[in-house]
Amino acid sequence: MNLPLASLRWDNSFARLDEAFFQRVLPTPMPAPQLVAFNPDAAALLGLDPAAAATEEFVAVMSGNGRLAAMDPLAAIYAGHQFGVWVPELGDGRAILLGEIVTPQGSRWELQLKGAGMTRFSRMGDGRAVLRSTIREYLASEAMAGLRIPTTRALSITGSSLPVYRERAETAAVLARLAPSHVRFGSFELFAARRMPDQVKQLADYVITLHFPEFAELPDEERYAAWFREVIDRTARLMAQWTAVGFAHGVMNTDNMSILGLTLDYGPYGWLDEYDPGFICNHTDQTGRYAFDQQPRVGLWNCSRLGEALFPLIAEQPALAALESYRGTFETTIDQLIRSKLGLRTTEADDLALQGELFALMHREAIDYTRFFRALSHFNPDDARTRTAVEAEAAAPAALTVWLDRYADRLAREVTTTDRQAQMLGVNPKFVLRNWVAQEVIEAAERGEFAPIEAVRQLMAHPFEEHPGWERYAGPAPAGVVPVEVSCSS
Ligand code: AMP
Ligand code: MG
Image 1 (spheres, rainbow, N blue to C red):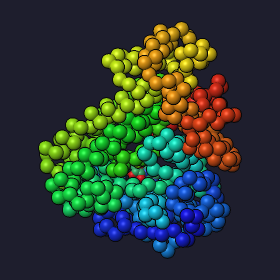
Image 2 (image 1 turned 90 degrees about the vertical axis):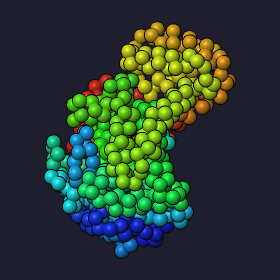
Image 3 (image 1 turned 120 degrees about the horizontal axis):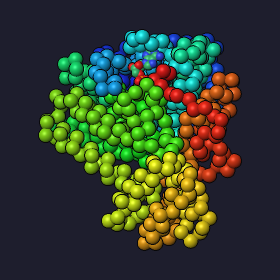
């Protein structure tokens, strides 16, 4: 289906909840908005005709300057634990939910404008997002989708000359973001902390009815526990998926944890270049609370905060049992993902040692995580050139020789080389959104050149394909490119 913008069907179910859940508020217009980026893949999810991008109406609606009658815009309230510290009231301080689009197939997408002006929840903020941060979120969410990892999606960026002051003067932009729901762990925490159990239940029922219909018919005493368990499963699996692709979120506060298990709120994230388990992507995170290798633990900590918020709905035993299942789900998933990265279909007693040695080696030798697994996907024990290519990923090629011998022995008891190579090339991406690549695109956009946004989006949307001619983006920063620090300011 290719519908014009005005023909999309809307059903604003969140706006039908009671007023305790949100503030009705309209976006604040920006002067002379222009289209910076448009994502046809996201348009396809909505059944939206990509030709819509060329219309004035699209730019007006997605920048917050125009409005369709069927929308019921609002800012949602939530709370959260930020860096472990309880913050009793947060909320959409700069994101405005326009409403929900229901596609001809019946799926539901909330359309949210991030950076669309102040709301009751803006606190000290200006309600705006800068061009730089919208490009970072736009590209990262599409990269994540390309990696087949649950995430919010990005439909468009509109920009304006409106100045926005961060560490320096920048310009305003609005990201049009899509997700089946933007409800967060912190949405439940707010009502639990305010001793409003009816609202906790109302929100849980809302989320279950629309997004977890498989549990809707269960009796009360089973429904909430089964749903909580599912949220825990999704969160544990998400942490394993992030780990397997070398992604660090950077701000895993409970208000950034999606109740649907999506990657949500891209700020100072980073993908690993060289393998470093202690990698801290967020310059503001001085203690490393959200370091790469802490994420699985933090995921569980966050699920525990959600469990406390749901305390009125779930008995203690099933709640604890659900939390206890987290670790097993994470471990099973990460084991499966790493095996698949290594091309191992059978299981042997020494496999864990083989993995452990590899990760220690990658760390010690500062080997590029993504490039290494991609090179390994081409490895053929009978072809010396493919071995040389893997060895070249270490500064001292001999560092990998012993491990590769062991790996070659192990592969001798696996499926054929061609089958394994094809399987590995389908799980070990050639492209991840490295910080320097995002930065290069941002600097071009700040000079008014928007074409690289779409070029890089296409690479990241198909990260397992070769894309000849784009090798430059498949590695760490070229010499001379100064790395930028990313922080919470966006
Ligand atoms: P974050 O950790 O970036 O997801 O944001 C935490 C909270 O700060 C959320 O409630 C945001 O809505 C709010 N916030 C972030 N930036 C701004 C801004 N520029 N203006 C108003 N609120 C903001
Ligand atoms: Mg947030």
